[in-house]
Length: 499
Image 1 (cartoon, rainbow, N blue to C red):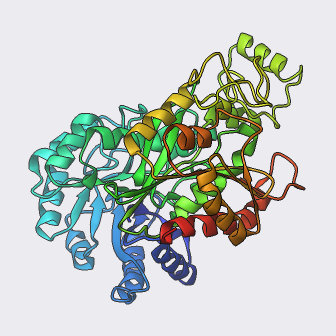
Image 2 (cartoon, rainbow, N blue to C red):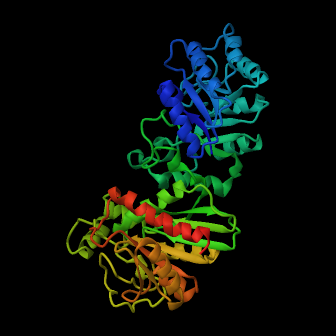
Image 3 (cartoon, rainbow, N blue to C red):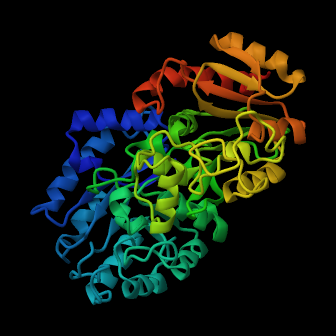
């Protein structure tokens, strides 16, 4: 993992900085560009000198990532002190911040590169110091692109085609950077990612990742986190472990309300053993999504003969409804939901999607034949008007056709039970159950589930894992994550290490 922009160098005292960098290394960071934002400094060169000494002291220590010194805003440069900066030899420097200065125009200005700015570019590049374009406005960016002899770097940004912001790169700029064999750092800055900055989350971030992966060469894409440099971060994206493996995500489809359904793909895409893991099928069981996402963030390596596709949340609309997060609902839809919820606007125990269809009884495998199945809208168990009527189910079917899993595991809560749908899967289910002190049971109460479909229609060994003791009450909260994770780790390690 490479992070092209992190502000911890100024934000943390030396001892805490070193501890932070060691943790970054253990979280999978190979290289980190540590920034000094000079805009509000009165004596930038002395600060740069002091901070560079810290990085020089750990330069050859393998317990730290490769640390590069980056300068953000070269406003302080003059013809008289340019050689002094070159002697310090930072790895990279941005000509300006969002404002205009004596070198170039920032994102919030209209100015172009000045005569002195062109001189600085030529001198710094001759000294093997990279120029960062992250804060340049469009005019300055294109002026720079015409004179640079180096790969173009944009250390922290996002993509204008996904969300309009003056700091985000247009497609034309992205193509120019890739053509130059440069690098682009994706920032964890909510205002770059979405207009809904207060509720910015993994979905907003992955929209940008998926867009880039669909249209451009991914070898140019790095992180440009802006850790310690932005006031807010996307929800649950507070550290390197949280963003680990996110570049291995894809959008497999969209919910009724056009929320992306996200899957991690870990391991060898051409592997012969392909494991599908799903969570968040039932809205109130959102703890399963958090448990699976945590596993995806923590996993280091997957054996070469295995590929894991992990669908973090199959029912994003329902989860938002059950957790009280903002949803754009018409008055008519909200009225229908309250009616289906027996007149209550408390949806914490809701299981269905936003159309009151229980996604886990909507698959074409014994559809409508389970003893708990309902034929009218309800918080749970409504089978829908027909099999696969819901876009969430169709997204999973599309994934199954293309991924062709050889094993499947569906995470649910609760009961400490492993369900299976075929007698031939009983030995594996019982073995797994014995490992984690669960019960193994043949599923009979409800049909039309994902496990039923994969086992009965596709012939794939498939299991439903009901995490959490039956004594727990729905919804199981985040405080139980530490007790749920060991069980999931043990089950998935069984599949990864060879059944």
